[in-house]
Image (cartoon, rainbow, N blue to C red; front, top):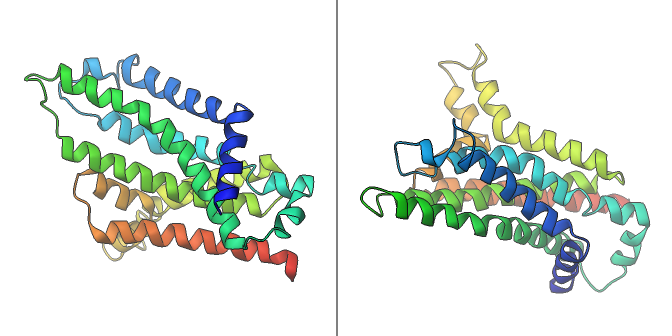
Length: 243
């Protein structure tokens, strides 16, 4: 598994994929949080990073599929998936190795945003007037969210040998699993009856709960279960070559 992990990491940073992903993420977040008046931290009356955690899921929904679209689609397209299958590694090790490599890249993209926390901490009146517990709870939620999106993206990539198709499919699935259940809960058939239950099936409900700074085991188990589900679906997709 480690060999797959190191291979994927080296590909990310030897082909500029990693630098482009990190650069685009930081550029978009920087413009939104420091330049756009409606979101700028300098225009806010409160010492908070809510703008970052509200916008990041939308950026991740585009960015992470771009990272994961080549995971298996490129392997299928070039025929290297057959070579990979003959290596002394199981399908689970291959999938987990690729999952961890993509998640590591997203983690590296998030690390520089800690400068935003330091800046707000220093600019607060009085200095340090920021809810650090909520901030780090939100960062934990972002990491879980990234893990869920990465697992979805890898699954989408395993379904096709076309990277563009993998990107579009991953984006659709990320959008649906994150926001789709919220929209479904607003249908008349669910309102006042099962709307809360339907919302709990989506990522947004659990991500919002963790972002409050309270880490509930139910939210953690939800993300772990969702990641495990899409990893299992990816394994099933890879098993098609044996059928």
